[in-house]
Length: 326
Image 1 (cartoon, rainbow, N blue to C red):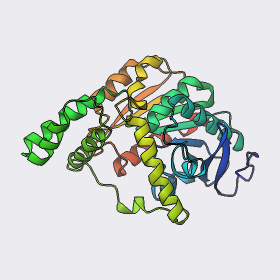
Image 2: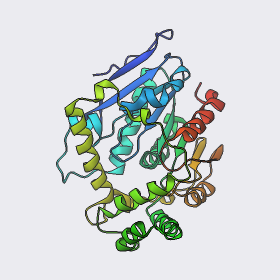
Image 3: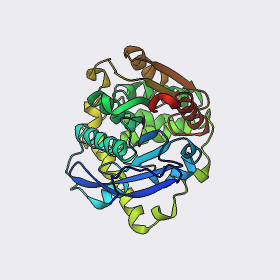
Image 4: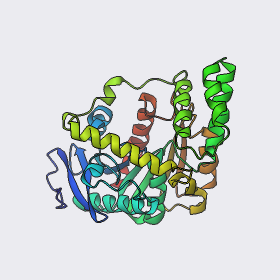
């Protein structure tokens, strides 16, 4: 179990991983940074069910000079799933995951002697991020979202855009697959995955690829047990998200219903070629919110998933506002 004792060794790097009692179960937390004195970032992974803990050094090694990075395998994902395998019919709830995330943030603040931490969330993680800062604004000094998921109504825009691209390209195979799905929302849990595969194909035509080396896991995440836990957790979490009959978590998410007001700075980073959480959808939501400070940052040559331009845009926002959590 990881300690919650205040870190005082400011001249030594932090590299910790282990379980923390969160929400009544033991959940996996990983911490990396050059010094306890640096501002703390809590990163909320996407999916649901896709932790970034195995790839931390590949993605965020440079960030560790200036920030302490706290990552958490959510309930139903990665190491946490392996420690607490739920029954197949045990539901995931946004409210439960939101409260877990707030507990992780408070643990991190205590561990590093902070009053507040920076919160970052991407895709599914951006849904949790908004819910977390709305429920406990006092815990966070800023929220940075990437590929902000707003509600499932955006799926229709994605479907229409990708179908138009496939038709324009004369891609009859993709057109046939998409037309066979019919218009969203869907009740078949396989349909969102089919759309996602075609969508990635077309995003790849106008975005910079992520280096393959990014997705080489650290050695401790290459055991047969971890790989099985990761895959099983990904399957469990995804089915919880879409539902067996289109009635999963995603059917009940609508960030507009949480209200427009935020009590902390809000930065939204958006890939210009994102075909899943599309720029017009995220910008419309961004324009609807109020915050002490807010910025919308479009990123050329970036789609929905992390790539070098997106990573650079995130780091730039952090560096330009490094004093926000001092």
